[in-house]
Image 1 (spheres, rainbow, N blue to C red):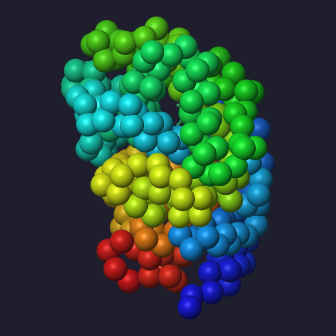
Image 2 (image 1 turned 60 degrees about the vertical axis):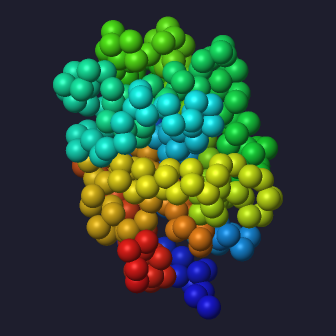
Length: 309
Ligand code: GLU
């Protein structure tokens, strides 16, 4: 039996001298204030155990990791027809790029770059007021994590609303192509609030369990999506979850994963468990620098890569 606690403790000890590496996202003023010297990691297994180390109980801004939950909701709402509005290919460009959108006539490459996620938020918004769509997401995340204390950090949402000029540009651009159906301020209101979800590594690891366990939370028995849908969301995370660092993450870690500019990464070991890591300093492509290293160490020590040990 692998001693997961010992593995986490070992990773933490080895990385301790490096904690603080990377650069916190400073284009969102509220995130620029976060102390980079933090590191937490948690594993929730399909057997119901939770292991953690470091700052794993401290809530942080999950940012783009929320795109996984919003995608799950949108697929539940409109099913496969979602793919008429968003592609499923790695983008190979930065997370907030507008160039590709013009060439591809307003259809974003995948649901995990900003443009794609904004289109997905527009889908979830259909038939709702923005407040209701945000409430739906919050209820969903609390349900999958089985934790009613999860909340949204309004200061982060406000900070992004005041400074998210590129996201306004992306949304307006897609609206011009007819790929955004609601007022841009409403869609971005939903998008900025989803990004401002505040969760700890422990909460996030538990929230990702349905992706590790064929669509159901094995602890609560809550059925979330079908096994086929869980498999497909994992496939998208593997190929598109780290912007233009997705290939590198697959190469080094070999697990479906989704990163956020708050410094978190959610990774899935299908059939085994869900892992969350947080360290606010980012690398050049906007993924948690130490988070990726920690996951590489974990995958090497457990043999959990989906490509074999
Ligand atoms: N809220 C961020 C933005 O839209 C999300 C980016 C990320 O986490 O990668 O810029």
